[in-house]
Length: 421
Image (cartoon, rainbow, N blue to C red; front, side, top):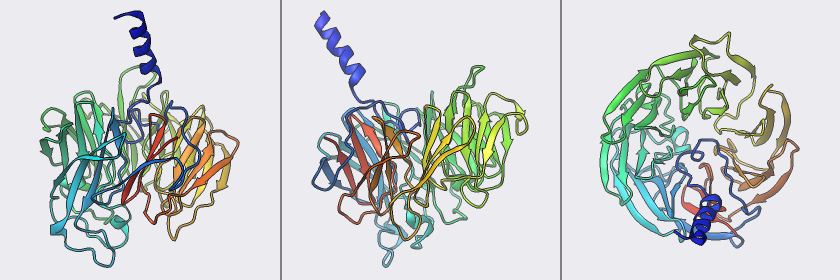
């Protein structure tokens, strides 16, 4: 290979947008190094393409090269006045061309019935395709709650299908936690399906380990690296924050907390993790990892009464940036819990205003409200709203945005949009 070719290859490697391979990006942080993202957009400005989807959903897209993978559902629960019958429910995995928005393949499967009943509330707020898929570059793994986990080849061939439990959700909220990958494992928080977390072999779908007692958790777990080495899988459930050995499921440590439901995902910086209670016992905890046994009194760095309810904050340069269900933007010091700002965003809704988690790149925070467009803030402890953008339709936006190749992918219940200059 001559010198010019080597330089060209290095340039592409350094400046090409990284694939967004799982919920909140390849490392689960919601952060991207991409540059040149637009600040403003509309139905006629900076809209590269718009694709009508074959069904509803609130999962985020993921990307691999020039392909997008996305889940949705059809046949049931699309209309609150006429929801239809569960026997008609189908769950889909789609492959979409990232450059054009064209659907390349659409694979559908039938769920295990009965599913959580559509009731124009609870599960109907996000539907039957809420978990974001994950890819290792060789296959796509999609989780549909009671319907199980499916592995598809990049060409759409179904390679295996595995159950993670079939309990009827006692809250009527359905499934939401997204699967993650660790070495040879697909790890699934199956609290809603079996009050457990399970690890499946990537090659076969066979269960490798299971940890029970994961109650009232819709939170996507995270594999972290403690300061003293090794790996820990951090899982949050009603009573505890848990540190598990991701290879075996062995419990390494636990930290007791106020009993409450859990929706936001785990955040990590160095050897510190952040966990958020969702509702009545609102609480944000900063916990140092690497302990053993009960670390409640020894490893909690700080805690404060605070919640986003559903969305997961961004952790950047020592600050937590968040958008909560009530439509407030927050900035919190990560080392102390001190709130730097709490500012009302001009988003309206008849109910909870924000479910999607914000993402950040190019000095900007991108947040999507359910019914009143997207806001763009400065990625700074000095609050500044840069834009409030609308796409001119009546779709519901529950999905966390994706950043790839200097563009944004926004997913509503009906469409997928590519935003870029």
